[in-house]
Amino acid sequence: MFKIKWRTFSGFTLAILIVVFTTSPQFRTIYALPKYMTIFEDEIAFWDVQYPLTLDVHESIEDTLHVKSMATEKFFSKPVFLEPVKHGQAIVDFKLFGLIPVKQVEVDVISPIKVIAGGQSIGVVLKSEGVLVVGSSPVVSTDGSLTNPAKKAGIQVGDRILQINDIAVHRDVDVAEILDRCGNDQKDASILLKRNEENIYVQIKPILCPETKRYRIGLFVRDSAVGVGTLTFFDPKSFIYGALGHVITDSDTNQPIPCGDGKIVPASVSGIQSGKNGQPGEKIGSFIEEDQLIGNIEKNTRFGIYGKINSEKIDLVLSEPIEVASMNQIQPGYAEMLTVIDGQTIERFAIQIEKVNMQNYPEGKGIVVKVIDERLLARTGGIVQGMSGSPIIQNGKIVGAITHVFVHDPTKGYGCFMDWMLMEGGIISKKNTKENQQLFSSLAQIIV
Image (cartoon, rainbow, N blue to C red; front, side, top):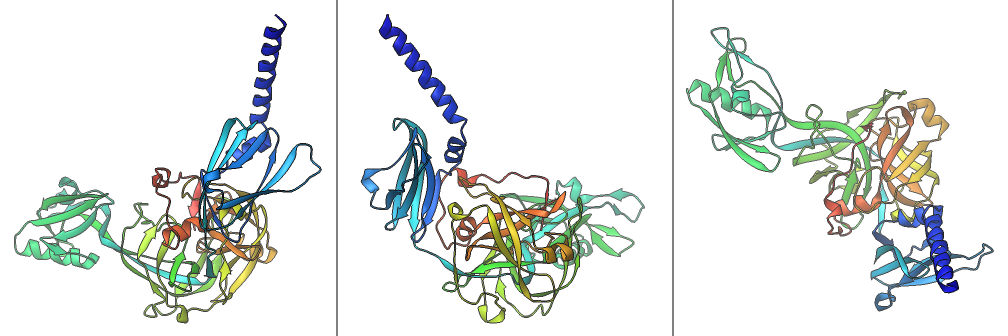
């Protein structure tokens, strides 16, 4: 009887300890660690592992990482350092009482990476794949009736027109000219559309518009997006650059623009519209010389635009490469961002990293920042449109880029990790996981 009571008491006590532990800050911190983590060879990952939690590196691959601990005055506390030894992978297990699995982290150890930090204002000209449908409007025919041939044929906003009568179209004027020619020849227009990843053919008979004296089908189309943003970094070896930190979307359809062609050119900031609560501000910029090519645009991704850069045509505030810090090295606290608020002069501004959201897979909003630089606050009110891509520097390393501003508090915003930007640029390999395919959620914000 005594043994039964003792076992019951022991089991009950253990259950209480487990429940208490799972509500502790230590458990929440460890459980929030990503399933996959990249560590550069010169970095050291640190966790404060306290009893009853234990940490273990799988013996079969422990030569990749060494576990070191440091004496402490805390009761049952054991700060643990993971010190990279060589390239490779290691599995780190966190267990309760050394028995109950709590978290498993796969760690990739890779060579240190150095890049040139940006901060320059750039003009972005992105040509879409085909010509994008951004709206529709009925056509007034010669008898005065209203009709919309494109809408009747099933063409939707967001579709891309790739070909008309087997002729590839790349500019909005191409679409207008070919449709007018079809009408004058009394021929139907056979249009190849791309909707998401599906190709669709439609047949349309253009209608003569008495007002414009041209044949039309009732669409508004656009072939490119133009704007001003900020260069984040470039690799001095491959000359791959990354900028903006977020995808370029069409202003009317709010859909990502598939990259057909594009370029970045020098830009200058001529003024600032300050941000206010509920009304984000923006840089007022202009292209200096649209023909002076800084680089091409090869990809428009959810973590910005990427291509090859001509480093001789840009000014640098940090001419020497600086190390990249992985997400596990970023800490809440003081940091700086590089950006332009007047002309072409890159300046350093003080910010505070308020929160680091460790992530299992490539996602936006990894870093929450607050502008604390009084001069920047006085000039811009905080983060404004056009600052997207401004590099974030902490402890002498580049850790990410500014991407979004909080709508109701322009002094705060989000940033993305350099881990994800380097993956998108092809500088480090992507994790081939299901999680990588997920899209990041949208919150109340404005892309800057």
